[in-house]
Image 1 (cartoon, rainbow, N blue to C red):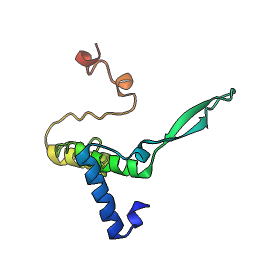
Image 2 (image 1 turned 120 degrees about the vertical axis):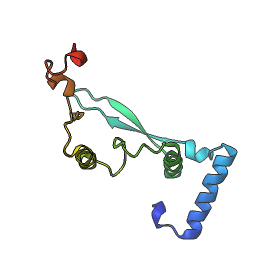
Image 3 (image 1 turned 180 degrees about the vertical axis):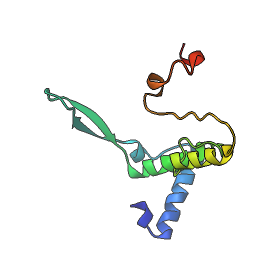
Image 4 (image 1 turned 90 degrees about the vertical axis):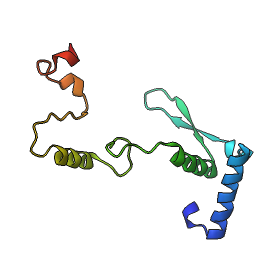
Length: 124
């Protein structure tokens, strides 16, 4: 919704975000949540609550989060948007090309499936 606003409206929202940050205060309306019950699966009819917050609050949180998350090292591929297994494997392949190396990948149930004889110090 916010992406389709005109520049003047975006500037006003940016100024509101900056003023809120500089004063360390959020508008009261941004703190209010609409609580909706969501039915739980199962034979009994039970519910869990879900809180729906203001889209302005969520937008400001997202903008702040972008500045709070430290930029990872250029060799770090975990939790990096747009980075996946293929980038990691390409980097590893280029780094070890022609050298004897051991590659360890974090796979689902990796510890349960590991060869105990190959890694006695880790699984003993």
